[in-house]
Length: 119
Image (cartoon, rainbow, N blue to C red; front, side, top):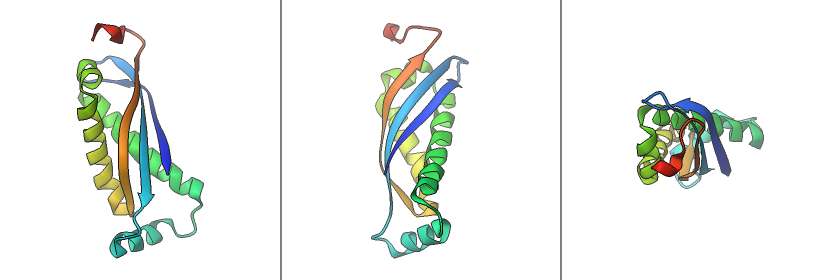
């Protein structure tokens, strides 16, 4: 399942408002019996859209938290570090629901106050 993770107007640790879009690939883990059982327990009776929304809200919350812990320059210049942190934190949370994060990539970063071209 592909998720477009939008975080509009989040303040970095320096108080600079930025907006970030990330793309995540997630799936219900079917190869691990324990995770499959957990997913069944969590999502039994839920539609695909409801499962999508639960995973999306979880990822968005973690993305926002990581944005708030870094500077604009860190996020912009070290996208790999930002992506890795979101991936790791979200993965540890979603695995408890039986969902595996296959990948997470920072797609876009925008800043209304300062031109990111200076970084």
